[in-house]
Image (cartoon, rainbow, N blue to C red; front, side):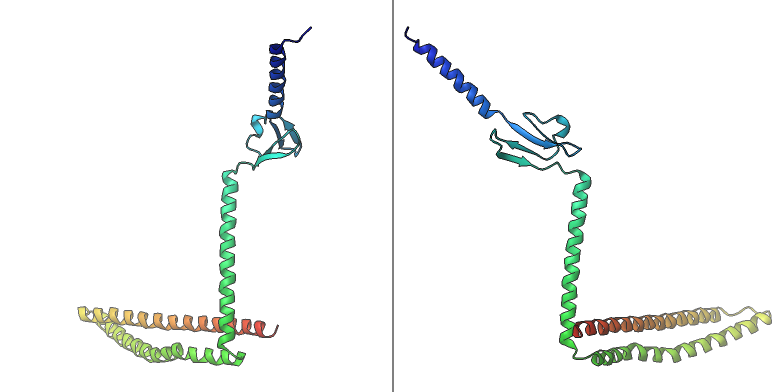
Length: 206
């Protein structure tokens, strides 16, 4: 009996369709919360945000994707990125300072000499302010004596005397603040040059 060509064609089409379906079927690979690897044609909804792979029937990876990034993970990544940039900037600045230090001085003694020259300005400023402070304090003491004498005699002190007292106290406060500023400057200079000296010795005695 001769086979019906239409039946043969229909059967062939069915076989090819089945083959295409088998080839087209997807296989996914994912890992659960316990670290166990799973394979299947569908990824369960609870693992849709986890890292996974789409594979062929032959086991070849067609595509893969990473786990979804949580806001906490994104923030941690950004924080680490900022820290890394800041660290690189600090390292760059340190190299720049080291190079300047080596190119500026030829010995630790030169650093000490430069420190002493730099200290001269604030030291001289304090030396100039101290006599002014002493005179201002003497004038204040004199004005206070006048005020005390008037109070003892039951007399009302003139308004001008009260203004002079206030002005003298303000001048003393200003001078004292200037002296303290220069003293703080002196300490900063000492700390800076001590740090430069120590670093210079580290760089030159390696």
